[in-house]
Length: 547
Image: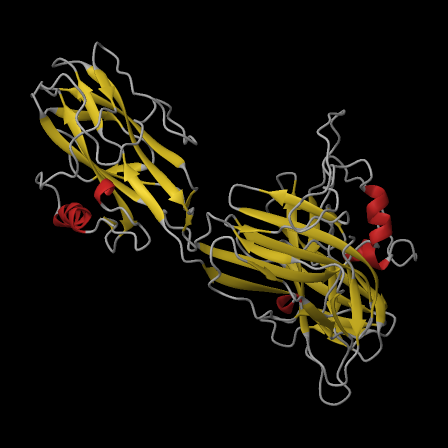
């Protein structure tokens, strides 16, 4: 959930007449440069006792329109006249070379030339004062025969500081189990928050049963996000909790396994009422219903409208404590199955074959670190050579390929890897294999700890079988389709070009060793052994209470 702050707009600096940006068109013959820096800083006031902590404020000088070098001298003027006593700004004491000298309410800094690869500009630091309010720093530049575009920074001292409390959630709920979300937070800042933004993010195996009119919901392949804008003044040093008649729950779905739930609270950048007016013509919002979603609804159609924007965040003194995350491990299973594959054809022809695996569920599988959810080793039968292989597959030799899935594989999802194979020699009943498992230390497929049916992790890959009928399958699932993309269900068969065929006829169970690596044989052996209302908040002020 990315924090997006337009500090100058939020503080109303332009409206207050504190910022003026003169428009100056550069002469066509003059090189143009610009100053870039932080557009806004929100800082806590200086402590009652002790020294305040300085914050870096750097401005960089960059060329525009192809201007990369300049031999002349730049004069950079830092205007401090509009700080309004909220902070002090000075050249950073630890700067490598002193460039600036005080001159009334300004710092005048000299920069000799500009060369590619050499940082240019001025390094300052801001020392917040005890007074709260808003100030502005602007930096202008001049150089003989060149133009320089100025930079402006708004500095705000004091703001809300929302701190999300940690919920004591059950970390091992059973599939179908629901638990309440006792959300609490406090404002540890020195200013009230004029409305808040509550953000909830549940991974694919978790559900948010309630729906509220002041929330926007987004569902992707791997998660559901709810963003709720809540009206009210949330005072400094006060704690808050969800009201009793607007509960939230978190439900572990039948497909849950290793899940994550994030929850955060942020000051609203725009008052919720104004935000609601702006989103009236946006995307439809689900109607309020009970926990089971039984509110009466009718399916209708209307002219499509633009999607409502997600709520903006306002300034917060310490964004690091606005959000928390819970990791839930649901006792569940996910059964990966390798689909048997058959190729037929004469020597010299090319066959299109789709290697397929399937997650039979009931759980989806996602790797928290972004590694593949599963890897697939494809051992080609004797006489076959890969002409083309998918981008997700890499060769480990002429006859062995290792393929990787995405970091997540949903429940009941097929993952397919299309190959083009040249039949260099038509060997009857040539045997290969398809193996699926978790990535091992060297990338090899190993047993998934949650996979209850290990026998179907290994499937036969046969070339030119002599048997005319389909052989029995250990899993009984359908054969893979010819599509090169990931599909939600398996197809009926795969076809071949050049007079050859590659189909998903079932073979007789896990293979014995076919000369592949020891780790792959171990996987097959293991498979033989193991069969088996509106949302709102009420304030509660408590002496010494913390969220």
